[in-house]
Length: 359
Image (cartoon, rainbow, N blue to C red; front, top):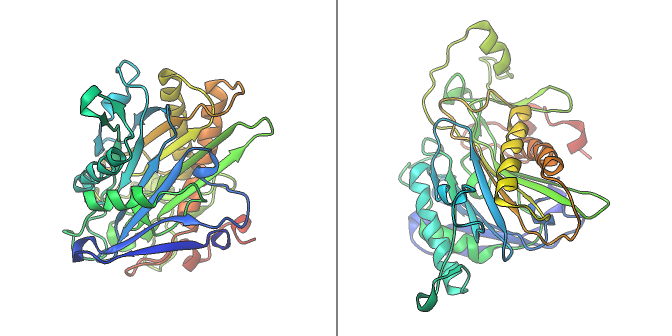
């Protein structure tokens, strides 16, 4: 519901490849139903102007515990081993989601630079601090222009600097700027997706939320109805339904240009083992809303964060179940909030937006 987001934009007047805008501040006009509903989390986007691509940075609260679960067979990640429960590191300072394929991993050093300037990171004595910035990337190099235009460290720095606790901007921004879906039959039948976010707050104060950049090979399916919202287009411009294509024996050209990357978070206290389980369970949200998912050409990754800023008690199983729900809703929102770009239509163009989003 774009009427809830009024975005203040800072124009960046630097070199051509990194010309773009950083966004992260809004004036909320309704309850925050995005990732930043969790106290202490901030989100900033940087969107390149020369080609639709960019990065999204999630800044964490002090002592936020993190973990990760990777299910796709073609991931592009950084510092995910440090989030294993057997690692000596249990907290993270930021998470980066980026376009640009493996080139987008260059975003993290810019975020580290900004955090270092703020003296945020793990203390290393007289040497200062070392920020922990795990990252994941999606491949969007084929979309919208020169593939040499991709996010770098300066983009990460600008996204971190613009990060805000206001409701998250969704759609064709940040890591979702070049995100596309429905590539089962190739790029020509694809559609536009982007960034989506969702949150749920229980009466007892527990908050569980998600943010995701959806760049899947498959379709986006509404879990509430089972209907395809966006994805593979048939020759007549309608939705082909990847599920029917799979069952009919239709072959796919395969290849890259996919991957869905996201974050689930809670204000509860979790151990690293529990945070790992929440990340695993959140992949059920991927499976509910994307068909097919976790393929050989997708690098699907979910980070989990637990700020511990809520004093109540909730078991990891309940949080994981809620994480799957909000992740599925965030994926649907990534399709609903996207807009047509560079010849690819969005769900709003096809008239397939679910009724609950038209209010």
